[in-house]
Length: 117
Image 1: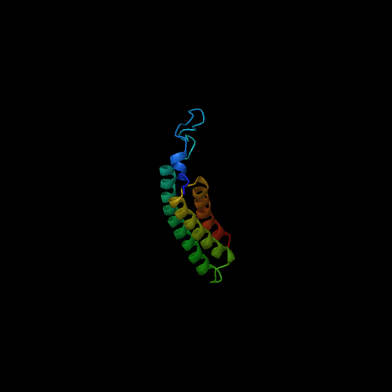
Image 2 (image 1 turned 90 degrees about the vertical axis):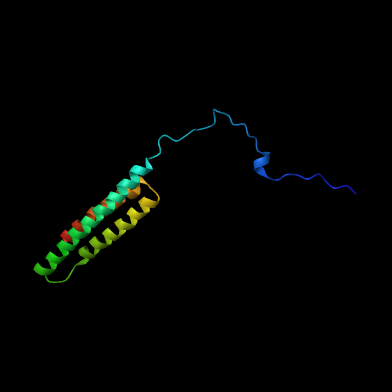
């Protein structure tokens, strides 16, 4: 009785270790600088805090001078700030330029929406 020869199924052992330098892309020099994006996202969280204070001041002024109840745009302003904070934390975890841009845009939209009301 003969046994068949053992075959090695490990793809790493059977892979050709020779790489062609023409096919090797090398490091990606067009990738965004992640430390800079993370710093921008961290500063954006401070910006969101300042926008939260301004939105709160606008809301209190509207409550004192107006009819005493907040409108739909005030609620939308606070929701915009909350979504901006989520985008900022996501930008800290996974630095993407679109997330940082969304964080700043949503932060600026908070007080502007409160002013509309």
